[in-house]
Image 1: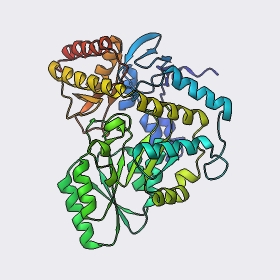
Image 2: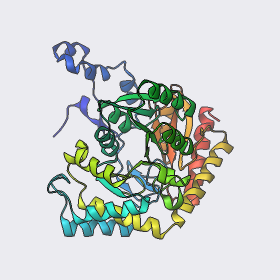
Image 3: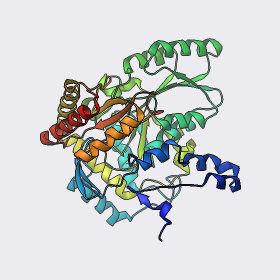
Length: 426
């Protein structure tokens, strides 16, 4: 199908222009959609300047490198922390699962969509995480949304970090429980909220929900203080370890394990779309709690189960993670090197503690220009704009994998130096 000229894709995304007068003929519901594409809007301006950084298609990916517009670039914006997406053993495991089970399960876990492969993965993940039981979800997003909606109700209270991922926020918005948002990583503010809630209703069910590693800053949650507050106020603690499993803690077991407190974190969630090179998610905890979720979480009951190839991929990645601990050592060596490298150049990287290293640019338009110039230099990162980060703190979100070479790391730093000098950022 040939699109009209004003709909022709640029950089893989359609560029849309509209006659403002045509909005009068449209449904009121869609008026906000049409305004989004007005010529004087931010979207149109960024697109017109060819600085739009999102939905750029990769033509080929080989882990630490990829191809965009026919050019090979160094990938510094992937969550492929262990570098396993292109590992021949992992790809073979996915193919073997398809050969045995087909391409999909065509149903929910609750009915016809449970394979012995799913049960094997749940058992191995529970053992790996040191918990009694595990339940799988079809995506990491659905894991947190489904857990919160499945476990909380009208008489409960959720205490949520203001910097939590959108899936936790979506979970709190979809439950009858009250939600109180405490300032990011501010344990004094959390304590104040817990005290007020306890005074008003000491018998209310309480859930403290937080990222284990925050996805924009690379900061680790204050798990020791969190478990103490949870114990003191008889609350359950949920850690979203999407960016922690396969990254931090002994053997890559996540944020609670990194402090030796896994037994005091009641619920830990994770995703397979990062270190495990696949798609899906999981929650681990006490057996009765997990079984309750299995039967009461709509996101689990009414969604098609993880396809066989995804499960086979995760099982192989879990095996490699346990057999090759040197991958974690290399990942941390790289993280420390890049963090210090950016600081030595004069960039602000906040308080990053993980392979997620933000490089603060500030102004939104400058951020997009910086991103585009980096791509021209042969480096792909992620441009992050408000509200994902505070106003005036637009940034380049860089992230690293165990398979990056020293040559690639220095190439990234050199590109940042050149672009930073050009724009007067340093």
